[in-house]
Image (cartoon, rainbow, N blue to C red):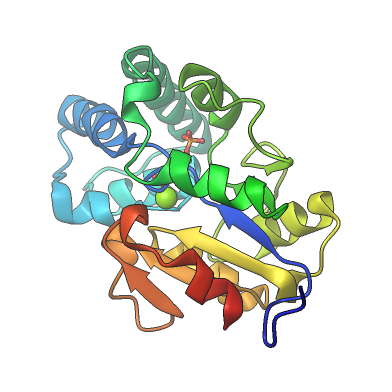
Length: 221
Ligand code: BG6
Ligand code: MG
């Protein structure tokens, strides 16, 4: 059946942290510990600015509140320490941490033969997907290991589209970060703002979580 207005071929690209899985608290805990050790002010408000941003850029945001200046080597060591602690915390991660509505949406999209990908700034993407049991659920993965420029640069989403074999304008991005919404728009894709990004002015629509998303309506627009 051909439905008027239905996107001829479409794909959905999911951000990982904060969209598929709730790793936010682990990132927060690990950065908080590093900040305390270095005597740098850190709080939830600063943490919000790290959403979607790469590890090294996140560190730069945190260090902008420090009175001390850090060499490149010191910065690499700090980022490594943060990641070690974060990976320790990630060991607690399981399928229980998959966010509401994710499984249902994946099944729904697969049923419609709509391709799905991950587009994440995280270098821990393979580890996280393994931990939550979704390692083989996606048709393509574009992550922090494969890109030079992190969100808001469109690189990760353009790579995901390329790996799926679809045009950027056929893609819908699910994002919880403002930087991710900007990246999707810059890639020429449709952006759905989720949770923290639900009120993002540049998102095509915003929802509290994926259980609230009307995917039929979105695909028909
Ligand atoms: C993003 C997170 O998904 O990945 C950021 O929202 C994080 O907070 C970034 O800094 C990089 O993650 P990782 O796992 O490579 O340190
Ligand atoms: Mg995110």
